[in-house]
View 1 (cartoon, rainbow, N blue to C red):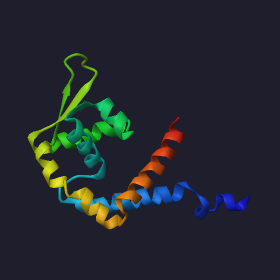
View 2 (view 1 turned 135 degrees about the vertical axis):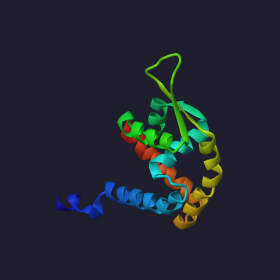
View 3 (view 1 turned 180 degrees about the vertical axis):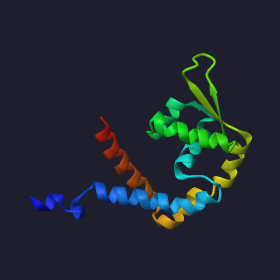
View 4 (view 1 turned 45 degrees about the vertical axis):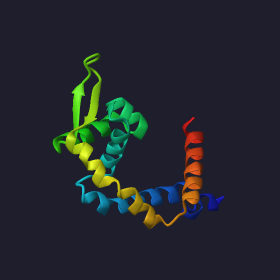
Length: 142
């Protein structure tokens, strides 16, 4: 019974530690762009979708509006995104990229490659890993 509480026997700890370490590996790459990791995640979503509302971004990134709103305000202060109230429903805030935000994508395109070089997994291993993570996540999320 005691073995159940050993940190070395936990599923959560290596996932937590790996997440922290991967985020730390992004830090020097993102500092060059004056971005934090959460800001980078928002930008990746916007580079893919161009314009979304705050709730849609939160759903994709699994972030609540209390976390997302200050993050978006900082990106807006850097003139990377633009926030506007929806004309159909003023409770909804639409977020889109500015010209600076669009241009930033070109500077960021090398980041995933640089990180994958550090991870040293084959494309097949990465796919397997992501498949397992998604399986666990989808099972827990139900």
